[in-house]
Structure formats: C-alpha cells, structure tokens
Image (cartoon, rainbow, N blue to C red; front, side):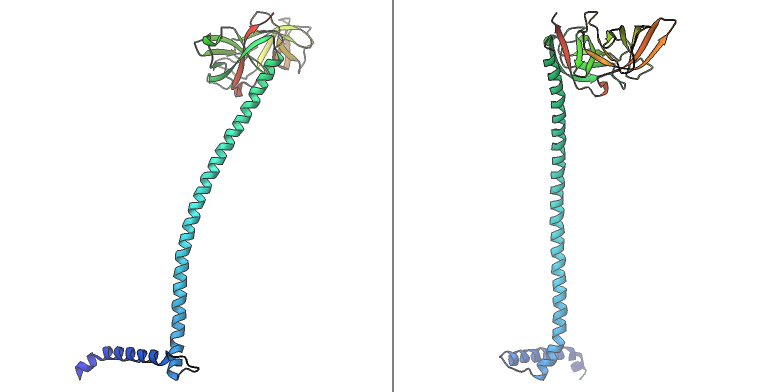
Length: 278
C-alpha cells in the first residue's frame, strides 16, 4: 500500500491523460450540443487560452516594437547624415555666391577704369592684429608685380606693394603708421597727406589727413581721394570719408580723421594696378 501512495501522482496524471484523450475522441464529431463534462472543461480552458493568447500577443508586439525602434534609429542616423551633407552644401553654395559677388564688384571696378592695367590677386596672409597693417598676396615677380604698385578694391585704396617674391608679394596698407598717401578733398580740392593711425602700441583702423590748409572748408562726410602726386598712386582712387576735423592754430594746419572705404578686416581679393596710362 505505501508504494501505491508513492505512485499516486503518476497514476492521477495517467488517468487525466486518458480522460482527455477520451474527451477528444468523443467530441471530435460535429454535434449540436456539448456534454456536461465538455462544458465544464470549456469553462476551465477558455480563460487559460485567452490568457496564453494575450501573453503570446504581448511578446510578439514587444519584439516587433524592438525591430521598429531599431529601424527608426537607423533611419534617423541616415537623415541626420543627410542633413549634415545638405548644410555643408548650403555653406559652400553661400560662400560661392559671396565670392562671385566680390569678384563681380572687382571686375566692374576694373571695367570702369580702363586706363588702368590691373591684376586680380587673392590674399594669402595677414599680419597679427585687428586691422592688418601688412598683407601677403598670391602673385609676384613672375606675374609682373613690382614694388610700389598700388593695391585697391572696388571699395577704395588698400595700399602699395613693398616686397616682391617670385610668386608672392607684401602689401603695406594705408592704415599702417608708416604709410603715407598724397590726397585731396574731393569737394574742396584741398591737398594733404593721408597717414595711417596704426602703430605697435595703438590701433583703430583709421587714417589722418594732415597738412590741410587752416582755412580749408573740409567737413565731416567729405570724400578723400588720391591726388596722383608722387607717381605711386593713380589720381582719383577713393580713400575714405572724413569723420572728424580738428585744427591746431600753432601748426597753421587742419587735420581730418578719415575712415577708409575698404574693410580691412574682411579682405579676401584685391586688385594690383600694374600700369598707369598717361
């Protein structure tokens, strides 16, 4: 008897299996009504089947959502890379448009002054400082560049060539303290000398027109142009605009502060005047 009780669970399982097989056989045919036992079994099994179905559905949706998130992450990376490429292309296009505008302005300046033989050059270097007293350009002696040639843009006078290499040249700008340009006030025709304000200890990017007659009628807003004296700078090149006027009775002269027309902080291309046709 003790062995029977030890084997009781196994016997119960075998009986249940036999019972289920019998139920399957009995209920395999088509009938209009279920037996009492089938109804009880159905009542028990149906919730279990629904529970298992919900679990299976949740598991399936979980793994499907993982796949969708992975796919979205891949698409996001592709779109992000594409946006970066488009932004870079836009920057390059904008830079090309700006460069074309600058070159067009230089070309117009050249065509309007057919008495000059000019060469377009790019700036390849600038000295330390905010206002760039000296510049390096990408053309030299092999391109016909020589010392003292004038350098300009469509906005006005830049300076003159001070050193020349085979394929490079140095330019001293008009804002440098060692620069001097013979000039006149366009409206009054008063003569003077335009000198740069920038020194080793002071920079403001402006110029001073000195030695103006004490009775000069120069006022703020007057245009200053090259006079053509000195055989370096051609006559009539725009230098800048008067922004302040002062006078010293003891010196018997007036001094005008001049703001250059060219933007020395943003120079990229310039023109070198290589010949002046008299």
